[in-house]
Amino acid sequence: MKLKRFATLLLSVSLLFTTVGCGARSTVELDSSKTTLTVGNWNGGVGTEWLESAIEKFEEKYKDVSFEEGKKGVQVIIGSNNKTTMEGETLKDIVLSNDTHDEVFFTEGVFYQWWARNGKMLDLTECVNETLSEFGEEKSIADKMDESNLNALTIEGKIYALPFWESSYCMVYNATLFDEESWYIAEDGSFTNASGKLGTGPDGKPGTYDDGMPATYDQFYALLEEIKKDNCTPFQFPGASQEYFTWLVAEMAADNMGYDQYMLNFNFTGTAELVKTDTINWDTMEFKTENVEITKENAYELSRQPGIVYATKFAETVLQDTSNYNVNKSLSGSFKITQSQLEFVRNPTISSQKNVAIMVDGFWWENEAVASFKETYGTNATKYDADMEYKVMPLPKATQEYVGTENVVVAALDTYCFIKSNIAPEKIEVAKKFLQFVHTDVQMAEFTQMTSLTKPYDYEVDTEGLTSFAQSMIEMMQNSRVALPMDTNELYTYSPADFRLVRLMRTKYAPDQEAGEAVANVLTTKESGVFKYSARDYYEGIFNYRKNYQWKEYKDILK
Image 1 (tube, rainbow, N blue to C red):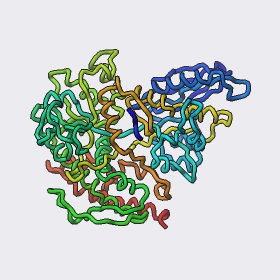
Image 2: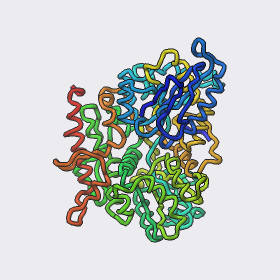
Image 3: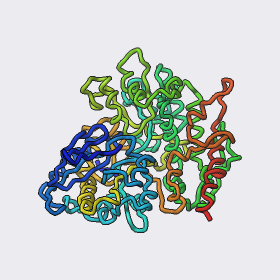
Image 4: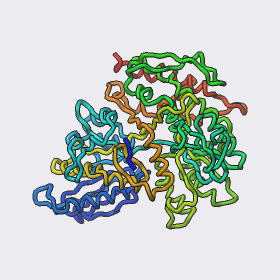
């Protein structure tokens, strides 16, 4: 199948390298006869198995090659290997201060433009454009990339990092239950099992990967009602990580915008279809739109995009019917993502527990749910031992009008691999070769087979033997356009964090309220037993925040 598209410690006396993290070799004896390379890894949903396998093969390939005078062979060491210091603001501080022994990074939460422009990433242009003939291939890494992604990564003609893996928040459904309980959407809009005459799903085409899935928000709401009839919990998200629900809502907003309209939130140039706010009927969701030419100066107007209006109403509809989910869990700060995963996996095996039909999580969930599979199916069990089939649910479209339009998936977590700029000169060659090696077709296919996750490059992968969830996710990605949310203009590069996908939902709906994007928290707030805020309040707060707060912070950039 083709896919489109904290510190380390050196003990100089004993020559031992100790890594901080889990899943990797904890102590490695340094071999002074070889060139050493230290790799930092975000040990979250992708784990470490893929990296250890790649290292073993890379070391074997270059065991007789000299990269430094007086040395032969390569020793690649996994250094920082965790989910705390290896992402976001913490990693940024480490990289910007050069306070790390790690030399090559595979991680997420990377503010690429900002780090590259601050001189903290090594120039990879030649590495990316060089044909991989040394590895038996006739293409370069650049040849395997989507042109739009390649352009987004190019800063004044140079490239400083490569996309790591495709990450998105999603809805996971128990396909076994959907079949047994007849929750699939039928051709006539009723419900049926997997063998029935299925509806065409969001893509509007019969005989494709999304047949039987809700095509529209209205069909999704009807599905939740059907699930309740069978005494199951229709929908679940982790109360301790409510941002999962916000990310999902933001993904839905972007999907309904379409690729070009969504990318206006980064390039700030083009014609936008925007909602005339005073025409919105929040009961029927009917409204009028207008075309507006977007510039950096007025891009706050993008908060009026129809996708945002529809997604906000979706959140209200799902959340304010509290029979759709377990309030004591999905709204509880103590209900963690690992508990949500455990209930989703385990409950069908326990008659006294209510089954969970749909779980909000991410593409990586099976890799994080290791403990859930072990607790449910035995100490040595893995995701391959589950009795249930799980699949990714393609996002339903807002209305019938959007059915059949392009499916957009946002690579939301800013995952990249790069080499730090102050790496020792004698290690640059081997570091670049390692990046090239892990981007060969064979290694990328192995990455997908080990992690059930995809990379945003063209490569072949045999999906036989992967879990049902992985197969369904890969098939969905094959039928989607992946958006890499970034641009090179001065407004975006001034503060990239302000334009992450989740920030589509940042709101300030009251003068005394701190701006934020906790959709579930806001829309479930009650006063005297009545929901205090509506989708309208939340949506109008998004426009208020962008125009009166966010864009005012950019006044020096917009001069």
